[in-house]
Length: 312
Image (cartoon, rainbow, N blue to C red; front, top):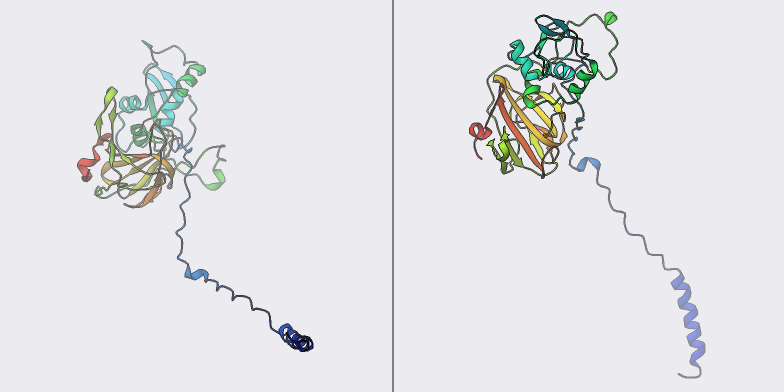
């Protein structure tokens, strides 16, 4: 570099620096456009699960107050009482009470109806006095119900509704006892409640057991659909072994059962349509893997679903 070049370079730097200071800053990237809410597909509202702890067959608590006569022991049916709740209160078999009193379909009790109670165990003749309260309570604690019990004894006794001014205040824990609506028409053409393969078929099993339905493999949370149009007769977990269970009454005296559910989405008295989602499959009750226990009953008789629906 020549000796006279330094002053020239200095002048060049003085000219360039002010120009650089006037360069505008980089503009920020354009903001992403917000997608309108209306553009997103609407989400279906999730059904609120029904509490499986509800025992719908206990519409109103029954207080044992049997009258002892030379003909036997009798209970007078109170408003809202169900046959199963009466049987439990006395530690008696509801099936025996149905036979003893000649009860027939639809097994609806009448207010003030006198129900004869089975004889006490190990009693050759009617005792001179009513059994001790402790004995009754012990039998009531050991009481267990079946699907057949719920089908035949889960209806609360109907009563005339008094004017509002004369209605007594409901006791704590009481539910409004209302009989199920009548179901008329022809029996539905049933469909499978979910597509899983059969893990346990209908009929006798090892150890002297008998499967009154078919168990279908399922995934936890999988949709369980109504097998036909009907009315929910029971939603709860009070029947041993079946976990969260639904019973649906159909026309023609038919009943469908759905057991081992993770969640129940309908309550007693709900009208359902064939194919409607009524529960979410699970692994509740006495099963080692997620599955659905499915039954079809006509009256008190369980029928193999595969013979009615086919495809299995």
